[in-house]
Length: 278
Image 1 (tube, one colour):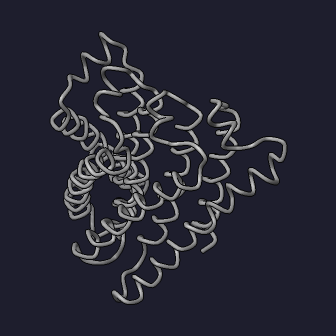
Image 2 (cartoon, one colour):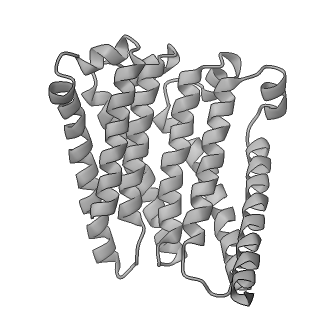
């Protein structure tokens, strides 16, 4: 009975810390954005912003759970370490938002699309960018290396995420940035699911035990190559085999959300299979 009570108290402490982290994350979000989120949500009922914030909160949760999953050093030490790493994770997530706004969703002003135009497609894409970046951050912080290795592999993962977004834009017959500006939800779903799938695969590449720079970088390169080969191949497979009577890019450009959902879900499923299998 005492063991169960101790476990209950320990888990309650982690839950309490998680609630504090979420409250701190919301405060950080308000501090680092130029608009009044409460006013946007209550008065303007800004669904686009709500989707983006939801992605941000899910991203913070992913980082917290990744850090919490590390080896235990006792309750007090765990609470201190998880707090510190969660704070670092939030700082990196804010940095990722700036990087993604400037280089991932670079063709337009994200604030204008979210606030002035309440563009749902942009909200979905920004939420996905939070989630994919949080997988990079969580994997880097959960890895059993130094602070330096965590930051280096986070930056490498973020760079590859941007590179894959450019590859996706190159492989499709439509301009992703243009489609997002035109509030094409199908394009947003397809692009966002692909970002999350890449994040899942890179999470596998970044997380785990750090043995040496050579070995860790080699494994990272292998997983990155898998992402760059398998995900485009799966998109081709969906286009030519699974949906043979539908031209995938044409359907997405014509705002066919149903087709985009099938393509996006398969990309994430394949990424999860890679995460489990490798």
